[in-house]
Image (cartoon, rainbow, N blue to C red; front, side):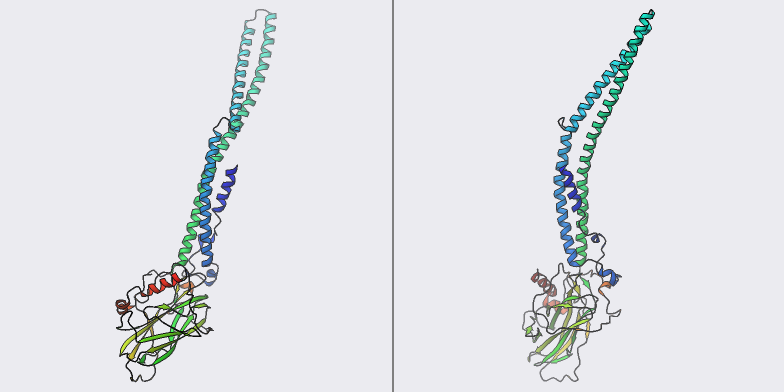
Length: 431
């Protein structure tokens, strides 16, 4: 039957998605060994599996609609007297009834012959009656055999009709079962993909300033380096996130700080109004680092005040489109023209405040397509202690993915959505 082929298609599409989706744990689950991590599906594989499962589900919906329509048509046809199975059943039942009538008549003939024999008065009558009784009994035996054969044929025809009805009813139900399996697979694939999309914190991805002084005199220019180090066990694509702010400056007002970064052939100027990604790094392997040159010029009109810089790494791996390195804060002082700074001391990194280190959840992968950092990556030995964090396999998913606000003072100046806007712009630009 055609609907049997349709059912086969429905059953097939219900189980096409990879079985690993039903059992795969989050790629960065706590306690997962490096060997186990390597066996997990990549983000690209999860995206493809989710798309395949969605397509299979859609095909199962169509198969159910078409298949159940055909199954209902088959059930209706089986009730028609013109259907071969129904017609055969009707004919067999009729033949069985006729055979039963013949048997009943033969039984009556035997009973009549026995009565004739009982009523016979002489030997001649008894002999004739006995002969008639034997003939009646032979006819009864033939009638019983014919009736048994007719009953068997009627049962066979009836069973064939019942089996056809049961088969059509079963396949009518199996289309729904196949659809439910496809739906379960689809939901499992979507859940696995949603889990992989969640941002994870990775302390091994560090972004630290090297050579940033703790005191800067107005009218001077200082060069320093942003050092991005991959202390994880996976190759990453990184977009360093940077921000500089002078206390008391209003948003959109001209800042006394002008910060630029080198792409190797030219200097790119930071917008200064909000955090932004710079120096896109296509690939940085475990244990490697990348140095980005920065240049900070302080306007000669700058007065004595406090300033700070924030550095962090937004990254993605083959398994997660959103990997967030810790944000570090560097406090430094601006001094008026002619001030003496004394011995050159570098600004010391400190943890970002509670409101500074909250970042939004990235819902899809993407990388900035702007200029990349100058130079290349440098291989080094990276040691990650308990306080620094370990591999990607030991990190968890951040439960607080609210928009980033940058300290109470910065919040008042820039608004709580500054970093969120930067992250959203990055996602939109790469859609």
